Amino acid sequence: MTRMIQKVLIAEDHESSSISVQKTLEGLDITSPDYVYYCDDALIKIKKAIQSDNAYDLLITDLYFEKDHREQHLTGGSALIEAARQVQPDIKVLVFSAESKPAIIETLFNELHIDGYVRKARGDARELLKALNTINNNECYTPGFFLDRVKYKKAHEFTSFDTTILSLMAEGKRQQEISDYLRSNRIQPSGLSSIEKRLNHIKEALDFSTNEQLIAHCVKMGII
Image (cartoon, rainbow, N blue to C red; front, top):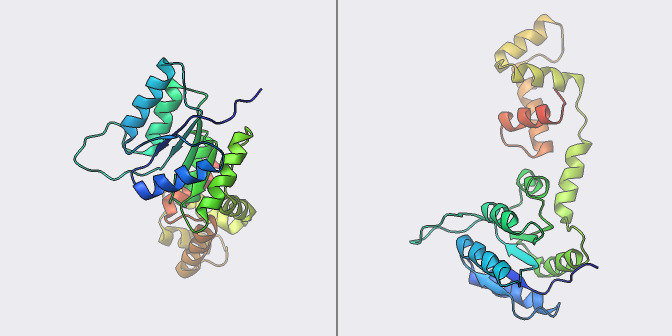
């Protein structure tokens, strides 16, 4: 039988966000969550809860915490999640953050195996409640905006021209060298402007800001 969420820990350095999360939890009859402003304090609470045989069911954490006078060992949410899972592998984790980059969110799901992600934005209280209900049913909550971006990323079809210029870039060729290669092999278009426009188009479609990110992604996905 799945254990219902009852004991919750909130790691959030902005008091207004913490209060918002607490009010949302009240809608699930979770009226006394614990909350901390530092990741180190969150890990200490998780360890103490385990020792007292009253472990947390859910950790809700931001990704980014502002630095202040207090020195911290765990400086962000990702480090906290990893450390928390080492001491309590079955703790559920919901990330509540303003981060919107699909690559970062994808890493949270694929490598840290979080149970849900909610972006701080307009309407986030409603989405937060939906995420909590989903996790409470022992399911993973993936935000709609992220699914749309992933779907769009997978929908991009690489042409032979794309794979040619990307493969050459992966070999360390500069754009002028790529242009010379295309011209000598009678591959059109071969101009520098055409190569640059195509690279910019692919980066925009896949939500990458640099050629290095694009190449790394293509290698990882076996495109080149």
